[in-house]
Length: 161
Length: 259
Image (cartoon, rainbow over all chains, first blue to last red):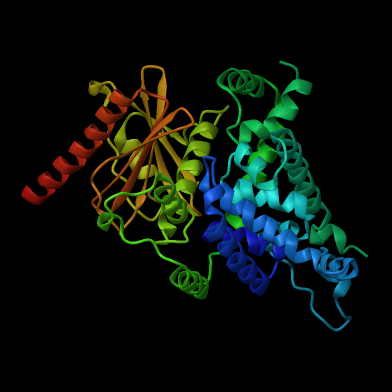
């Protein structure tokens, strides 16, 4: 249950939508339990959560989605600072979280499923409905993305005049 | 193995997804190649950062309430013991719904799954290159005090060389976002990592046994501490080891109480 909410929360990036999605996924799971065949119940339910998420955003217009994604783009804090404001040094602990939030969905979800949910490559492949090879390459690229982002948004580098 | 072959497999190694043969070849390569070792360290650091500094969102209470009211609204199967027969499909569905948390929500078991997976990763990582022990000694009077300034609890440390399980040393490790003690033992060619940390919640001295990804993991609680032993050692020896520890702790308590 927590796994379902956690995934929904990371995909939607807000609490209310996450709750709606988990509720809807719960109802679909209850209705669909007859179809469950495979081994991992957790992976099966997370697949439903994920599909519910995608149905949910289909309804959003493309422009709305673009606006939402843009809002989460990482910006070094100093660019937003007014002349009479003091720049607060962003602590390291926030950076990785922010970097994850800003990652494109397809990279964000594999990181969440692997690192926070501890799913195996096979289970992740089931949830995202792709071959294991895709999981492996996405995970690898997602990690490289994160490493690069962490270097890019180093406040010391980015805020040099 | 060449670096060009190793680099694409590092992620799989990190995620415990490699078969024994490949794992062994890559581990050997990393031991001698500073470039690949550097890449490996970057990966493990990133993984640690992600796991420690990323929020795991727990489902808010009202969500559980909402879902259990859905469950009430839909037709509920009569309690199992009252039925004289039970269709396999129905039994399977109930099991399924319990396991995904729609019936009888069991948050604790998911956390346990994740803990075991962290333990496996920690164990494998400790076997790499240079980080098996922070303090290498089979003398408990060297190992135990080493932890004094590094953790806020006092681990029980014993050497079992005479029983065939020599203490190799100790290591500071991280599990579930906290500092834990890892005591390293050896049995012939096999390394055992014994993780321990304070756990007030339950006093379950019964040893729980898990077999996962080729490792044997034994866990129990005693005197307010949680113990997790992991190794690729055979089950019989693992149980012997666990009992050695348990008996020592019990004996130690008796002596304290009598003396």
